[in-house]
Length: 272
Image 1 (cartoon, rainbow, N blue to C red):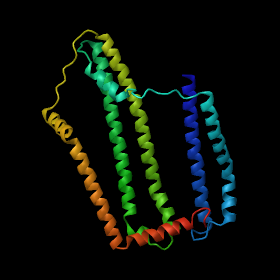
Image 2 (cartoon, rainbow, N blue to C red; image 1 turned 180 degrees about the vertical axis):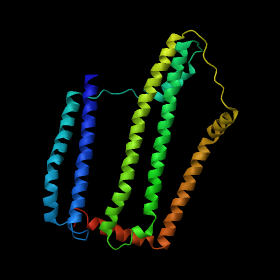
Image 3 (cartoon, rainbow, N blue to C red; image 1 turned 30 degrees about the horizontal axis):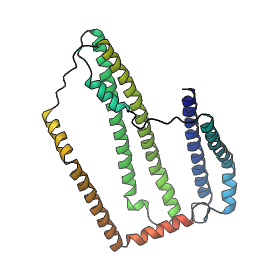
Image 4 (cartoon, one colour; image 1 turned 135 degrees about the vertical axis):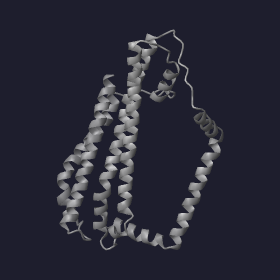
């Protein structure tokens, strides 16, 4: 447990440090671009060295942290996990199927705790989905407006896109990570509550759950034809990909993408 706790703290520290180093590089890159009035040629060797030198300290600390992680893995080696380790979702399904019938205030409180955890997870899923959907809509609204990409100054266009789309991506990633962590915490809490209820009502008959007939038919249909449905989705995706590729070739979109890629690559840090 001590080794696992140390590795967990180290992982959190390295993750935060990585984000900080990346943020410093992005900020300094924007400052270099702003110092050059957002024109081509802003990334000169002298400007890059002057602006990125302060960031090098945190970069060296980050490299040292990675080396420390290698040493830590030797001192506290990782234990080989079982390949067939059961996850929280499977455990919940098994415990729910063994849930006995009961009565009394203690039983009702336990069932209430289980329902609260399920409700909280549903709220977290909906909130994360709404957050990602809002970010996707806001990003698409910006990206699909031709006025934002006049092709006059690629540097300023990329910077503007980063400012308008980047925060939504960060918020969406943070929401997904937070939802995943909360899901695991909530599932463990529900598992503990179910185990306590099973122990308290041991020996009583299990609850009989009746599944909706429509849902049962839908599950049976997808279970029987899942292979064909999967191949159908793959086929439609492949056809759409080839279709858009051919359309892009005929409307000279490939040339536009190539020119933009060349301009971006030849104006980034180190190649300017």
